Image (cartoon, rainbow, N blue to C red; front, top):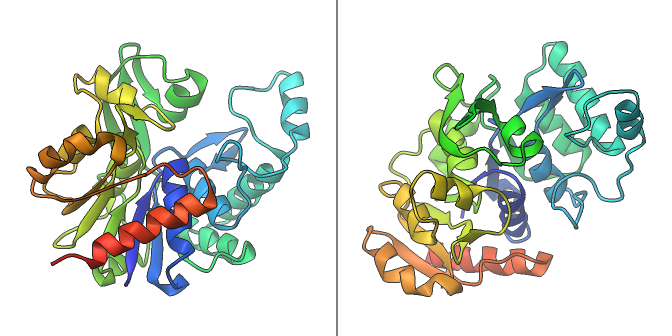
Length: 305
């Protein structure tokens, strides 16, 4: 069974890792959001892409889900002491990734080729693709004006009230080589439990998913997100945050929907959106949890009439 997983940061990375524990490497392609990429200290930073790669490689910080395990912060702390911006942490090992990526981008290499080479160096057997080689920037419209995503998310700690989103450059961006082909040959596309507004939607703006079974996993459990501002965004946009709200957002695209057992009372309403449902424990607190959930999703996919 060939699967294409669309992923943002920590939640998406965890499910991708669960799928990677089960599927043959050639049967899993992970397409990652790059709308939150930005430049910092003159370096090209790809937060979601790095989180997915570090997780698949077994290098991710188990406490935070992002960054590198056993990280040190000497370069960043010294730069901050000398007056550099201190709002976005860059670990010493992580810094090496950004330095080499930036060097190669300035030399004319494509982000997709650099990512392929990094995956090879980290012994990642699955295919990991950034959504586009062209820059796409998520801009958050707030009550304090438009903010670049990392400015909103990290520097401002999601405090400004959200009014909407736009994806600068999406109208000109093309999918990376191999992305369309991966979707075309996939049996199912899985929308990982990532933020629908700023992690999954940017990918869908670039890569069309037409006439393909799609299974979405809710990132909202009991009206709250495990990580990130998705629930806050729904509320500020006038939508009650819930698994049903996520299902409504994917209406017309998703043919199957996975929601947590805490939200089992919403199952019938989700089915009313013409989606098959799987109710299970969607929390991924351990590697075994990731594998279990991935197994259940694959069994759910395989049970399609």
